[in-house]
Length: 384
Image (tube, rainbow, N blue to C red; front, side, top):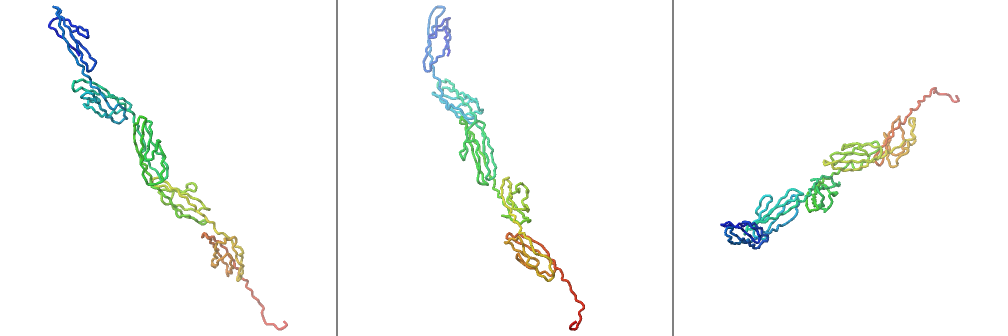
């Protein structure tokens, strides 16, 4: 504060307690709540007459601040701070906009920066003004990245994982997994699962993201007929069901049709892999049994003379469980007697318990008898 003393005569001045000689006095009293007194002696330089006067200054206290809270916040968050003073005051904030309020909500928007906000208060009684600052540090916030949707086939295993822009700890729900990834192996089909993961940095900043796991409907592949079997040299048609595309193996891939015709020489294993519209797969195996034929041969046949009867024709190396049919005579059994009148072709058909057939064909030649004529027949006398 500056004081000025005026005299109507040329004069000199002496101020106490500052011991200065100017007509003006500038002082900065430092103690709030204290009364300061300043005296000045005025001496007339013409007549030497002296006069004195004094003035007082009372130092009003400045309003003192309390600002709460003083903290750091995560990027993207807001913070509400309040300023209070020990004296009735009007409070203003520079944010940098001027806000006339004791409480202000701030939205700092740059990570890794320190923001300083200025608050000032004007004593509503004496008009004294004071300033204070609030510093807010913006901590980096993690950004989690995850596939929004996983698609999978039933009974498969997938790795569900999340990435973070900064080091964090993780918590998945449901399951309470604390790693950045986990293996998901459902035992159901046509179901949807929802998972949420929270990443928390060392500063306590968080980000949350979620994912959906969609499990496709189960595919069930089948083969008809069930338990296929054929006789040697026969063929069979196998049909795949339940898929969109097919692949047959034995053990290598040999057909992509849903229907295959097979004629193996021996019992053979086949695999069928079917694929659904969602590219889910199912595998089924089948064994195609190939039964051997009930083979045999016939011994003992030879040409006959007309009217003769054969010795029994016997089937050699025959299957005792098989049945035998002799055609065209419609005889049965493993041994028969034949008496053809003319040269005849016979078919012998064996049938075993698996309904497999085997045929042996043979012919019996029937020779005609010689025709005998006696000549010179006439009556004779006794003794001739």
